[in-house]
Image 1 (cartoon, one colour):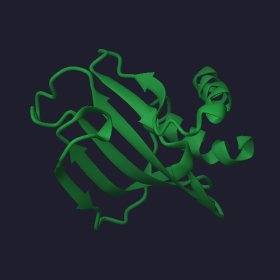
Image 2 (tube, helix red, strand yellow):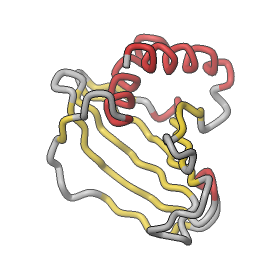
Image 3 (tube, one colour):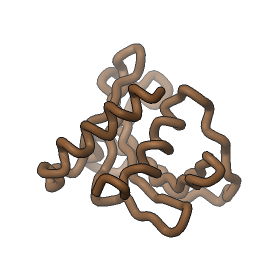
Image 4 (tube, one colour):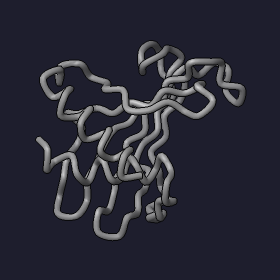
Length: 135
């Protein structure tokens, strides 16, 4: 996990010069069907909480929702308790959040969910919580 966080940190620092590029790649699912990206300009800290926009780009047909090619997730992370919650999710017909919106939901569930150690969710939380230290 420390190596993954270090890789994200180095990738983030390397790509700061490229900040005009909206989506920065940071990982791929184990099966290679989804690439994960983040938006540098979306990272905002207020005290122990950080908001960050992430993108899941489906490299293969999404079997559950075949018309969806990508989705964005506005997440809020609590850096003190290592928990997160979804604020808004938006699915797109096109890749990389382009094209028409398939659907969008604003979460009404304000429950904070612990991040599972070693998971993508934990890596996102650690990256978001450390991003402002790098900027």
